Image (cartoon, rainbow, N blue to C red; front, top):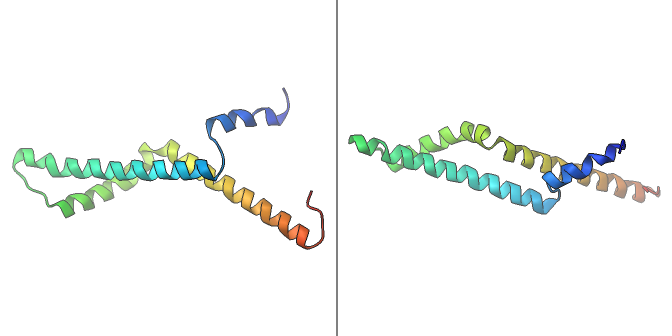
Length: 111
C-alpha cells in the first residue's frame, strides 16, 4: 500500500478521464454559465419592474453577461477545475502519443 499508484484509482473514481468525460464537463460548464446569464438577465429585467422601471432586454442581457463572467469563475470553480484537468490529461496523452510515433518513425522502439 506504500506504492504511489495506490492514490491513482481514487482520483479516477472522482474524475473520470477521457475525451467523453471532458466533453461532458465542458458541456455542463457551458450550460451552467448560460443558465447563469439567463437567470441574471431575468432578475435584471423583472426586479426593477416591481418598482416601475423598464429596462430594455439588450441592456439586461449585456449586464447579465458582464456580471456572469466573474461570478461563474467563483460559483463553478470545481467544474472549471475538472475541465482544466481533463484538458491537461488529453494534452498529455496527445504529447505522449506524438513522442511515441516520432520514436517509431526514427526506428526506435518506444516501448
